[in-house]
Image (cartoon, rainbow, N blue to C red; front, side, top):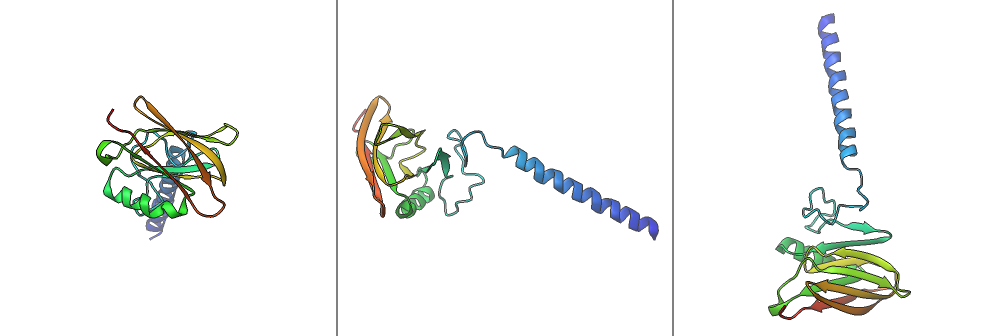
Amino acid sequence: MIHRRIVARAVTVAAAALLTLGVSGGAYAQQSNGVTGGSTTDDTSAGNANGGGLPQVQQQGDVSFTSGGVGLDESKALLAAQSQWPLSLRFTGPGSDYLSDVKVKILDAHGGSVLDTTSRGPYMLVKLRPGRYTVHAAYKESDQTKPVTIPAKGTAKASFYWGSQ
């Protein structure tokens, strides 16, 4: 009887140790690579805590952003979330084709870069502070620039269209 209790206790201690190692190992594997919330080279939304099909939210400095919309679930989620994001961007091509891999650079009123990334799909949502910004969007060899003003309350939208390339 004593022997069984010792064995049971040893099994319990071993299981607890393995669980602790597994949790801390997982935390180690999730260490940041400089981009909070995923990397711009990660094409999946695995581990996405946003729910509802919204792509992974990322961070550059104090600017949060997400982009995507290639699949129907992501498109619906991004469109539904637009009202909670100060800036919504849309990228389309000939025949209203949705575009991805659009290089996006947003500058503040003083010309300082606040976001420099590549869109993973036709929609990009950006959390910016109220103010005036310039959005540069480049697709293939063509660059477009649009001024946007983020209001203290409400949202701003900008659409970029590229004709036949």
